Image (cartoon, rainbow, N blue to C red; front, side, top):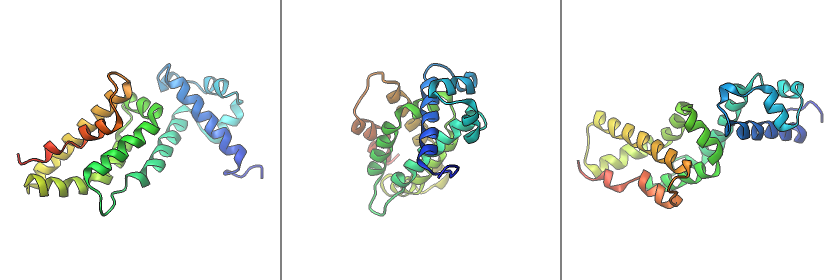
Length: 184
């Protein structure tokens, strides 16, 4: 039916606009991308754009939300998980969304999604670090977790840049380095 938000034509239009924005963001920053450019790239008129989004920032937020909706169930910590399992899933999700993740990391617009991603692993990290590292000071554990998140983001950024590309398994091993869990 026409006018229903979840009909196929509407979904196709929204996906086309998202792809167009991602294409443009590979050439210039979000602040310089205009609605006109997006519409030309998507071959969609401006009125149609404004039916769905207020501006390019709003469209990019929709892309960020899509990524989080896609990765959230994959990154939920399972009862039998260890940090290595979680790290492998994280790298696979980033790889599947490489273009959008590369853009988000380069734009430094990652706080929201990084917080959401790593919140899933916080308790698992704390448990494993306590068990294997024999560290019981919660404040110290929080510093190690901050180091883990920052280092992981840096490693993901380098990997997505395409320089000296390593396999996803190798990256997961680097991100969730068991050596970090040794007694300090």
